[in-house]
Length: 276
Image 1 (tube, rainbow, N blue to C red):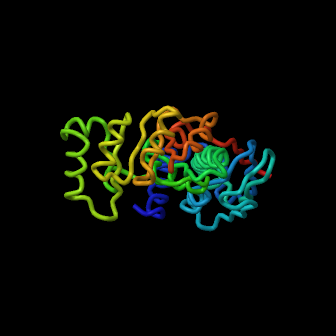
Image 2: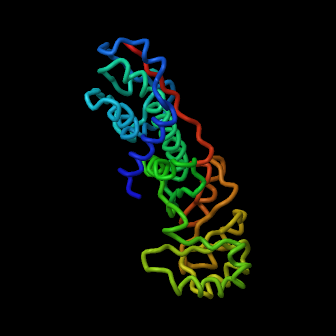
Image 3: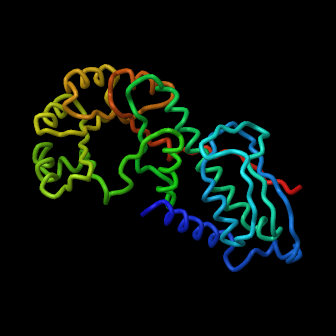
């Protein structure tokens, strides 16, 4: 699914969830009443999700006017005006919560990602996301990871292969499962295998794996794995990685670091819409 289709689906679901058969409270406002409002940041954050935010208003009334004071990916500060909105008061009040929910959540993902990216600045490693996303918001959150400076893994089970311990056990071992995977894997499909120790890494290298996930390796074992691999495969570290240790992980020489908390443990940006 492309990003435009994902945005439209997300907006449809969010508005249907919130409005249902109609906004009862908005009926208190005269139909022709117009208003102006500002969206104000209460946090320091990386702004993300403008298209989702705008779409919630425009879906209800294409004539709503939104003037942005910051761009996608900009850092915003507490008390800073993010945008100004004018148009139908009813529409503004009806769209407010779904629109802010998107902007807050995606900004939270982008902000956390930027923190990890900045923590490893100067190393050769990349920060990667995972499939540990909020249901229904996978493409949106992966977009937010990119805005935060991170990189995307496969979107789902259909566009990449990650062979984990249960796949290995069921298929009869690392060599056997890699040989089986190569029978049907197209050149544009990523093929990655997870290893849990140096013996498994050695077998994966022997079987010519080109993308290997080091699952819960210690820092010492990561350094050993990097030295042993000698660039014959791309190494990705995963498991137990936090802002406190991510730079130490990057300095082992691994190529990629995948972090589920980027999209799983989201602290939404605090935003407020105020009528003038």
